[in-house]
Image (cartoon, rainbow, N blue to C red; front, side, top):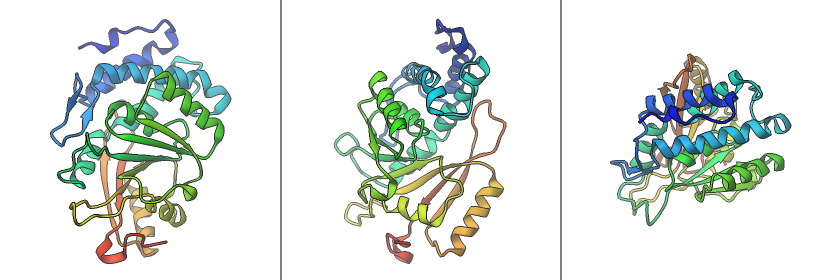
Length: 275
C-alpha cells in the first residue's frame, strides 16, 4: 500500500505527508483495521494516514494564533517537523502502550468495558489525539486547562469525527479521581512531586476480584540520563511504586526518546502514596 500517493492540494504539506506515510509504515501499523492479539482494536494505516493528514492541516490553520507547536507551519519544513516531532512521536510507542494496557486488565472484554485514557496537559492534542485516531475502541479524555486550546481540540474532534474523544477544560487537580486505566502526557518536565501526585490520583485502583493491576502513568520523555535523574529524585522523595523506562524509536528523529511507565504499588505504599 503506497499511502504517499495521496498528494495534497496545498504543496506545503506534500513532503510532510510523504514523511507521515513512511513513518506509519515504519511503525508497522496494520494496513487494515484489526484487533491485536491482546484484544485492543486499531484503525489501520490507511485510516490513520487520512486522520493524521486532516489533523496536520488543523494545526497549520490554528498554530499562528494559538501557538500549538514551536514549528513554523507556514513552511514545508515546519509542517514536516510537526509530523516527525509531534505526530509520529506520539504514535511511536503504540505497541508498548497497548501491551501494558492489556496486561494490567487480564480477561477484560474491551468491547463491553472499553479502556479509558486521560491525556494530561493535552495542549495541541499530543499524544492523545494521534493515539485516539489509532485506537478507536479506547475512550480518550483530553485534559486541558486553557480554554482556547480546548476550543481547538473540540474543533479537531468534530472535523475528524473522533467519537471516542472528549475534551475536559479543567485543571488536573479538579478532575474526578480514579477514572482512567492510564494517563498519558508529554507536557510535564520534570515530573515534580505535586504534579505526580495529582496524576496518580486519576488512575483506577487495583481490583483483586478481577485481577486488575490498576492504572499507570505513561510519560513521553527524552534522554536516558534525564530519565535516570528524574527517577532518582522520585525515589529520594519516597515514591516506591514501579518505574520502567523503555527506549522508543521515532521515525526520522535522531534523538533519544523513552516511554516511562509509572505505577503505584499498593502492597508497599497504598494506592495514593503521596496524597
